[in-house]
Length: 569
Image (cartoon, rainbow, N blue to C red; front, side):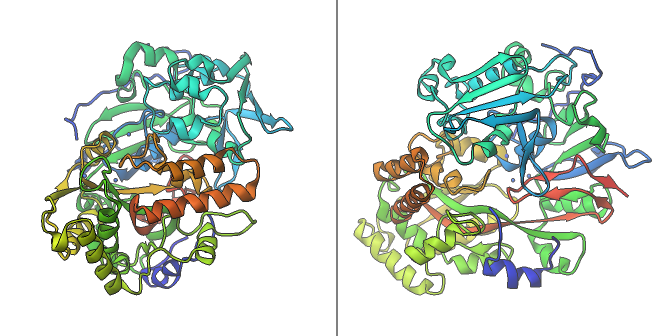
């Protein structure tokens, strides 16, 4: 769906959505691990030189794209970023996957059935599945991979969210990984036993973290396995043939993939460009066929350009407070900083209408209990909007009052703080706005700009005061984002913890009553908003440039691009 900025302002801003990474460069050229029978050895910007792109063949079988800078990781179990996931879904495939209409369909599993009580899921794998090195892929590979995600030594950010439904997860998380109730009664059958029925478990099985990875290559190569083409053994449409940090990652078509006949491009070059202006220049020069990071200053001039696309995605741009550090241990401080943000100005002016102002945590497109219903609409009907974007002056006065109540009248005695962000898109501009807005409270803030993969690593390690953050949904259920704030969640960067919140999300997770599931998630969202667990700023849309001759690709509401079936005409 291609839209001009004018349409965007009148349509997306009214919420008409109807759905749900710095290291040194070092090249590594890969052997042809994709050749049948040949064995291989045992993660949103300075960037790539456009001249380093792979040569496009005469028949257009090489695609050159930019979806972000160097990812923190492309290890499926460790990745938690959209850019890394875009690469992973082209290299790996799980039991199930999403099609172009966002429906869950069979992947490596040819079929599956669910027991009447919803607790046992049995998957039957396709005949003759192979890894990219030509070795056999069996159900035991799924047993290993899922246990690896649960293993505390892996420290997978998504481990708890994805596997806490599975029987034995608590014991596995504590170190007894064999307690996880996943099994392979035969090479082509994979069985999962749940503690409680999960209404979206099929979507979890389609998620990029849940793909199989090869045990031999990981055990032989450790963490380095995912940055070396000779050891990045895959099972999906492509395998890696080059990894040059800060420049490019090259994927080559995998002849051992079960559906290789329908994969079109022989090569996909992921250009790791951190500077959006460099990406734009490369695109203008014809060196790139698609770029995700469009310079924000160019957006007005792109109105009406058929190569410029804007599409809604399910996600929220927000600010994370490090609740383990003073003064952010105080909810009044967090709420004061949150209320001092003019969300309408940020979304409409700084972000030029390409995002929508946030009024709650969960935004448009996420479903509620009834078919066709909206979680956002139900929130508005039941609780009202937490943020009144039409009355910023009142919010600012309330922010000043709260800061005074917290012991910092006019910001007196408030420590100087730092805001962690990267320099892509609107992030620097938003940071500079927050610096100005919070100065109205008497607060001095410095802006700490880092490369994207440093930002994600520092957030997870707690090396920040306040940080830019955001979440794009992995599946259409509000728990996917609300649960980020649960105590112990691997993606809870601010380490927020509230027993009332935890109680509500646990009840939503374990109930078999769909109505109660959503009611408890509404309750949890209200606890988080009233406690200023984070500061929602805006609701996401993706905007990008794509050459008009690039056909048959699609963009999902989860922020992923699917290039494997595309053509250059």
